[in-house]
Length: 180
Image 1 (cartoon, helix red, strand yellow):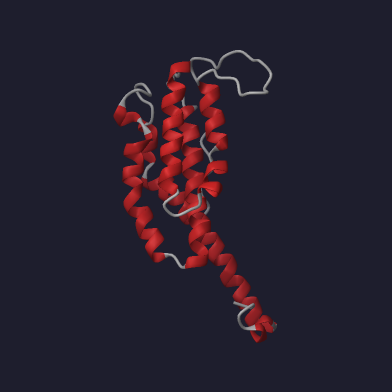
Image 2 (cartoon, rainbow, N blue to C red):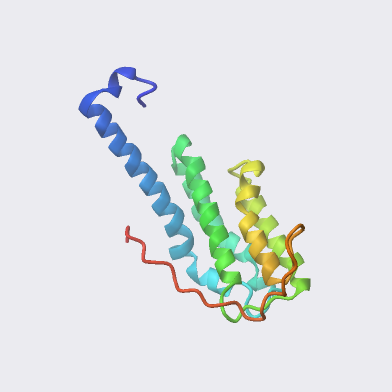
């Protein structure tokens, strides 16, 4: 807004505009975290159980649950905030899928790599409806690396290491969200 109306860039009004900008950024971050973790928590916990080969335990059913709320966000969020919001949701979903892969009780074989890659591709296609593929694909690289490691696949150029253990190591839950 200060760029559109330079006279507003001075004094108390400028301070008010900055407060509004910070509040909008905080709201985008809150929504990007809340939607996946609070609305879809049960769906993330079902991922890859009992095995990654089960169609209901894969990512597409979770994306079906996410489709309606995400479409509502796309339709209701103002243009310049839409991309940061979608990127935030994408990042949160990607991290949640990676965390689900690493949950205790999840086991993966090298043959499961194709299924996990197909899920990452489905996630990419899903978010390419509102974002550019060149923006989405790099966001999924950490997820793809975790999936490869879970399947015992060594990335090209990486030092050889033993295959991933049959059970993923337990990690403590994230700290509580201060916005709740």
